Length: 315
Image (cartoon, rainbow, N blue to C red; front, side, top):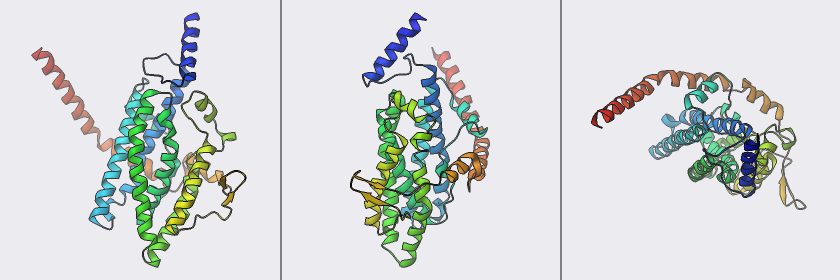
């Protein structure tokens, strides 16, 4: 017990000094399990998030658009790999995390349970969804857990490209024909509110936020991040010539921020619990792809074993 108390004191001192906790450092079990939950959900979101946009690769309006979208979807796969690798430093395997997702014991971001109905949706995802992700992830570059923080540095650089790509798609559409502008506005109308939900429930109702902030896993609360995002996209929407679908959106001079209307948290809860438009389809596709890819994983394991035997023989 005295030894544990000393380790706990060292852990708290490291956090107080704004330094990083590394995989071989002692950490409370609650800190470890909180990180596994958050990093796993983040990794799952990157992988599931490939589906809505991947649906448009074969239907992109030009070869250039197709090449850009392919690159973006590949980036998302890479982000998932970075994050699963970060989670593995906490003593949990990628296979375990995948099984937990498939069994419904872990979640991914609810935003990916909405359909991409038109090409403009690809733009809305890039501008709004990736914009919200950047808002949330930039503070994670200063996360107290080293592997997670370092993974986020590269992820944020690539997400910045994704956000700009989405904005450029919407800018092109909103400055095109009347039908194209209407398509862009329709996509914005459908993706705006789910994007605000991405930051999680209000601080007063958040189960994990306070503890994560105390451990410096998170640096800003859900409501603070959501406010940053709203303040960022209002002038961007004006430049696009599109209207954010919130009649109560007004500038509050006293606060120095925009006030937004009420969020439909019942919809958020419904989608989170698996009753969104695409929940079942997303998970069915994920499970099928995992099963169909088993031969690749088996081949990789067999090849690694073969190389290991060859290395021993040479030695």
